[in-house]
Length: 206
Image (cartoon, rainbow, N blue to C red):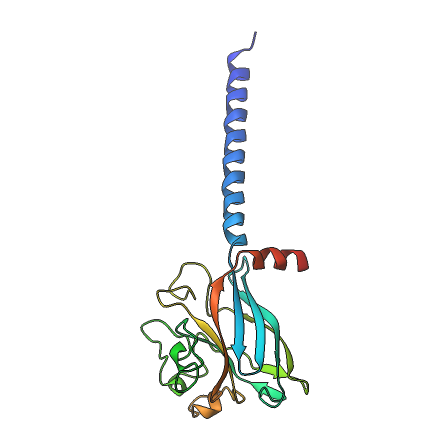
């Protein structure tokens, strides 16, 4: 016969086990949701192609990495500005080219997407320069805490999307500069699109 204390112990054990299972299931669902926070950018320009993969890590940082290849006569050796822009529309035939992407991504009550130089280099979409070698090749890797791939006030997947632009000139990353000093003309563009497989690739490489 099982006495009252034994029954109580079994009941408490069963309740604890249920809580562990529920919490484990919730954690698994949360991890699954986090694993889907990936995006892809296919960059295209005159004699320029490239792919960047964006992955939101568990700490909220967004990793951006990939490669770009261009004709060195166009994508010249040295530093080129690379930024997230406010609108996910890339039109090479626009005047000027890719101007349909708007200014640098900078939502919020204190944001200032245009003119570009007004809040540079403090836009949420401002990123480190792309470093191009003598063959027109570049390997890019950066981390940013300024944007997110999940639903938030700074998500790249807002109502009008977002894009990444490679600029003609070096981003001198200084306040109070000109548009040219922030990168100048636009050489290549790619729309930021959701890509759940990018997180899986990141987990395999880590």
